[in-house]
Image 1 (cartoon, rainbow over the protein chains, first blue to last red):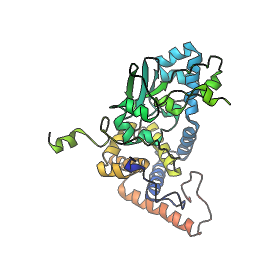
Image 2 (cartoon, each protein chain N blue to C red):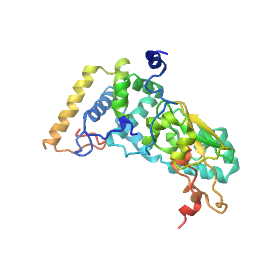
Image 3 (cartoon, rainbow over the protein chains, first blue to last red):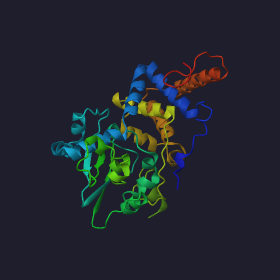
Image 4 (cartoon, rainbow over the protein chains, first blue to last red):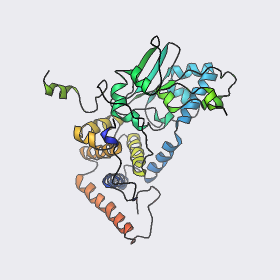
Length: 211
Length: 126
């Protein structure tokens, strides 16, 4: 089922001419600038910040934690300050809780109320994360949801579902794949995808990534 | 339980645990205005004008029909306008007039009257 709010934009796109909501955004922004509530350059700068945040940032954090036990301990104790150590700035007031997957626990992240997500570390969430089927079902039938992503979790592994809030966001640290003992941090980071850090899949196996 | 009790207990955003269809693993590149809208949300938060929870409540206050029919960033920008009215930062009249201005600039641009292309925020002729 496709959520009804994901309809294609008939008013925008094809012709390049903006539609009603595009005009509304421009008008709100221009008035706020004219009245001195915002400076003109702030939106542009924030767009640059948004563009600089991708799942590669989170993958680096996870790969470092796999390689450096002391960093991992700090990351699990305080996700935000450990990320800041790596130079990842938090442009909002959110805290990050890092959840370690183990052989006995698999973590899954959702925001049932809206679309809260660790954006400073992962960038913007995918559309499916923001839509009803995932938000509604992840908390009620996580094993079925994970199976839809191709992730089969054995019955003796506990699944913990974490519901995000405006102030507290979650990042899953997947299990380090076997056979990666000799990998560098950079090679390890390539195995860590956005979906693995949401918890809907595992980290990629190295064989799939090697030439 | 009556039908209306269910409405009281579940506001439009409160969908955790409800039954729903298959998860379609969809995503899209943001339109330029959607990205500007996201950046605007962040900047409004920095300035303590609209925080995340006010935004979420603002979307919920649009009511079930708009929540269902508007796209994600359409809901955000309409919610921002309503919140800014309520906080007396903007008035509906000035917003309506500004929208007319923006639209006129595009009309002029489309008719080739205006020499400039969209500015570097991508929001049309300045």
